[in-house]
Image 1 (tube, rainbow, N blue to C red):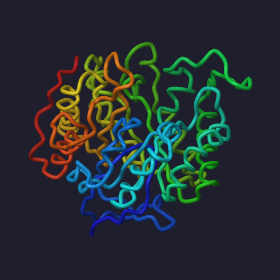
Image 2 (image 1 turned 90 degrees about the vertical axis):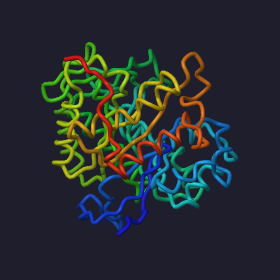
Image 3 (image 1 turned 120 degrees about the vertical axis):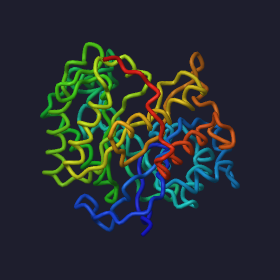
Image 4 (image 1 turned 45 degrees about the horizontal axis):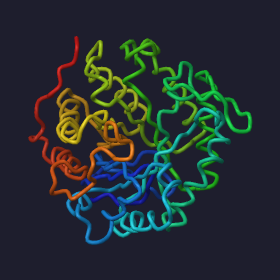
Length: 363
């Protein structure tokens, strides 16, 4: 049977409709139907002014028909005016697409779950005010910002005297991320969650990452946090890897082997697994070739994506006001974001289209 679209979440993203006889997981409760085996996300870096693409008839009908979920960054919800949000969220709702919102979870200056939830709930309420009551919150690169060691340098000071450097241990991180989920769910009882972390930077299970943090093994962080979530019966549904293809071409080991180890852990916890298919923001032409290539590379290595996430948070080099790719649509333009999405969707529908890995990783 075709999966019933029953939920949504944080970030502008689309999930593909798939035929499924999937067995329901205990994580899918409270009236939510278990998702199909593979789902496609369309997650562009939409900016104010892009609402023109959502006025009917849309110029991306194939992508709209193929997808399940549309996502928006929490910052976009905060920055957009009601007039800018209305056509986007109306199209999402009318098409029966679920909404995904990508949020912070924890951040410098907001080191406790309660503080971060209080800061982000007003933005989440904007989706609710637009008539979308069920959504999914995706907590993005949380350890990378607040763990020890962090990837991102915290600010020198915070408004109100809050701590800029959270310096969480594995234990305090798991506790506070759980507190964030609990606080958000108190306000939105039907919300469900996902979690993203940087596996290009950090190591995993003895396989190194990049740079000075590359020797830090993220596996114990993931395991302890998943234990916390399970013990508190919080509705975490999936884990995604953030590893732009441009950042892993000089890996000391084969990154696909490392990512398959993460997949094994996540599947063993009865969660869904995905990788953010993106290239690091070089050019429209490279995005159009490298993103489908990334899908082929992982799929051809023996890995399997439950959530197939075509995503961009990039700007054009030298022009932070212009997104990459430059155009969201029309999908007839091969350089547009929706055209790239359609390339990946075709491979999900017909695996015979998957080609050999176009990237040469360092041994």
